[in-house]
Length: 133
Image (cartoon, rainbow, N blue to C red):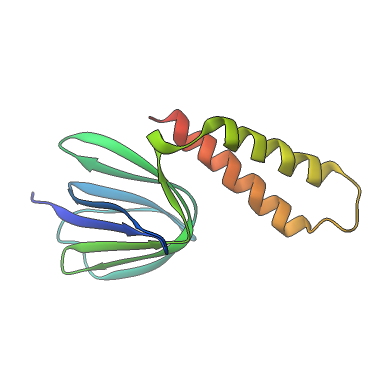
């Protein structure tokens, strides 16, 4: 079947550069998969888990939005941030989740609710991805 080159890049670094058998991404319109020789594609991504397979073994990343571009058997993911499941600090993610929940339940008009909800979504997704390792 062949392989697909996966490049996951953030503003700070390249998180993944690997030949993969398939990739599954959290698109804004729903999860989608990419196999080798996929037709050209450009998609916005939401916060969630990115799964890719190398040597028959699934690997997981947390990504917090961005874009995926598939072209000429290369998939490039430009993410705001990305972490391998094994690199996620679960204690830090749990603390972020608790802070976000506290801000959302506080009846303080100074709290930016959209920002607090986004923080909660990121923290919950990071914990979910960390559990997949």
